[in-house]
Image: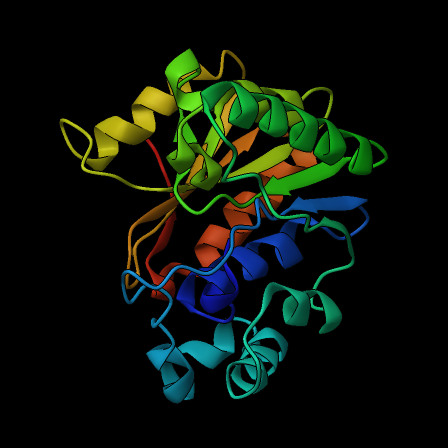
Length: 235
């Protein structure tokens, strides 16, 4: 997550989903916060806020809050301070520099230990890396790009003994997005759901270790947000 993404269409969907799943839960949010980049125009998907007739009915309170947010200073901190979800937030910047692979790997391990400790009391967690899931290959951990990713190992750790929601930005996976989603569902080794959202950009929210209440809420959310091209992935 980067400050420049705050309030875009991805945030509308992800915060809407969290607001649907979190009532009665101790929600923890790991932003996987990354400093803003300037090499592309990502984060400009805010045109939906100029079309309330199409989008506002999905979550009027959230829509209005994000509309105010994007006219000010767009930031992850602003999302937290808006009180859109009641949560424990971890916003320490994810390590992305370092003098070499071994140093970056060690920094990442320490950072993730802080995430686990901060979110330990939570019974529902959300992880929001820029790019989403990657495998656990050791070459990943020392790569600078890993700062924008969550490893399978980290996702499973966050889902230990509780439901966890993991953001994934769909890629040019061989065989297409359906095959990509199926791939990750087979990697988790536990019951998991996948919520697909394809308005403006293709993204998937994986829900690991869902209980019956969370599963029911996911289904209701997908039914309510179908106008935003949100659906529950089925084989």
